[in-house]
Image 1 (cartoon, helix red, strand yellow):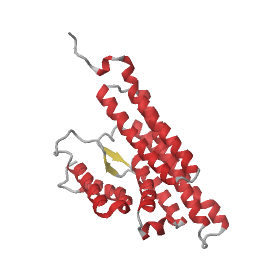
Image 2 (spheres, helix red, strand yellow; image 1 turned 90 degrees about the vertical axis):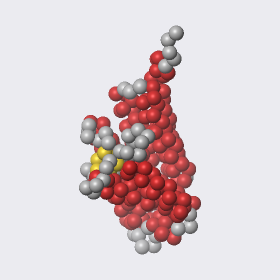
Image 3 (tube, rainbow, N blue to C red; image 1 turned 180 degrees about the horizontal axis):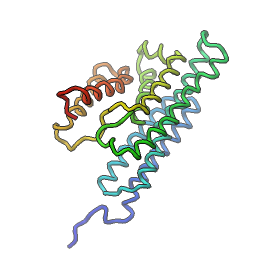
Image 4 (cartoon, rainbow, N blue to C red; image 1 turned 180 degrees about the vertical axis):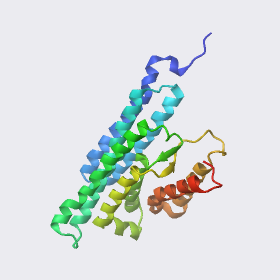
Length: 251
């Protein structure tokens, strides 16, 4: 009697692409809510998009359902969910901060939010380069677009769910937010060597820095609470550079 295998069913090859479409749908709905000023809800929808982004790759590996169309569809979804949606969140935050700041002229207040325009543009460039760059299997070059999204929504979450005066000050400063938008956008197209989130099996060996990163992240959130969320990406960058450049480090 033949053994049962999931990928024997033809329709199963479409499962990863369907999940990718859910990523895209979540990103679009995040755009809608962000445009309406519901930034926290938009941030949670981006979190949902990240879950779908993980699951589409996981299901593709499980079902051995890789395709060129799936690869391109994944990048298109990521541009919306991790490029456009975070950019609109920052656009709305800068606009609100500019309107409430007495030190910003009316002309500057109208122009400053457009610093966020860089984000979807450079996210698109980063993803297009990733699709044709064969050197990024174990080490990313530049901040991944989901990392960009985490950096944005972590600020929203910290401001919403914590009483951190630092976050309150940061989110009410239009110039700080505009600089943040530009910095994150540029990080996506740098050649900084950053750790891939793909674990090499389940053993500790070869995954030391990934386990360390996960441990530090959990520790920060448990000890400092949601106010520490904006530190996740800076810590990720620092640990990635340490893993790449320290002579004793193993990736």
